[in-house]
Length: 442
Image (tube, rainbow, N blue to C red; front, side, top):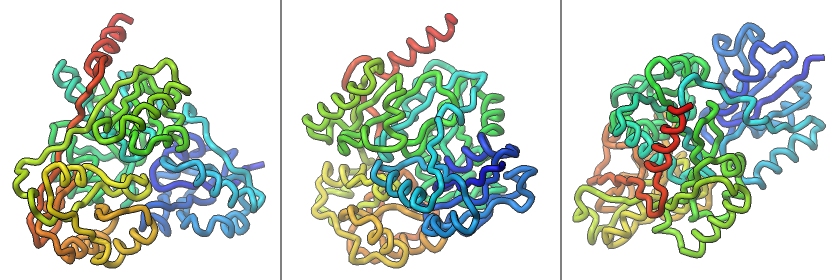
């Protein structure tokens, strides 16, 4: 008997799980995807061109809010959780909603969805969104470049637009961000790599993406999203931990899985977190993974002209996912504003409009900073209006996305840059050099 499936996710891991386990598999019938977390990604179709021969009409994508009625209406046997960033309490709330309807609730073995590459794969993942993966992945890239090794970066998916145009994406220049009509979240991830001269692949079909990446590189850097597991089987698995959210390395899904299988663990932000939280984080990590190499590091923030911030009333704009569903209280922008002597950090919440105001209502933990959410033209418009409404003298951009490229802001902006600095031995360079040397001897 054919098992009827709903895949529950947020546009990314869900599509990959379908492609790996259910596409062209007559034992299953995926009757729907459900979507949440990210606005504007439901009420569309996973197209027939991607879904395969068993789905000539494609697969509908509904809002997760409707999960109970969908299970009944579509006679669903099993709901497959395919998220990349949830706390355990959230996982069980979703499971309880499903189980109460009489359907099974399933978590997939992560190795079942990992593609094996013919090239070396170094993965950079995390225990929570906003832990600092991007600084670590760029550090890995700089180490490989210094050794003359050909590499490309493959980024975890963020397919929020026209899925048929996002099957395989290749980013080599900033113009490609406009070519693929990237959201702010995508720009936050791709832009720093492009500025460093790194080629980035992303999209929907990671089997095809892997084939393209292998044509151009001897080493593939998997640049993880949220706290998801890699889609490619890693030869070296680096996991970043954030002691500002001590304990989340044990209470996030699938973040704890990452911690348990890590070869290298980077405890980041040790200059910002308290020594007690850094110590507790290290104890938690060692309790579940005794084999991993532990590196302590800080994400050093800097700006090109500190005088623009000093003594001014500033609006801080932070990386969107980190401070929304990542539950991070603040990011690099806030740290820079404090470091360089801002007179006041102006609270943007009273001036928020439209979808930005709704984001504050949904994520009540967010403090006096502005999350750079922009998943549609309308939401980008609301973001710009909120920035322009806020009575600040300067905008401090903690988001890696350069808003000046696509938005008209009525006040000066200064971008915050940050890089990884290890403060313990061995360093990432030591670890990667040793790893590559051992691989070459095999």
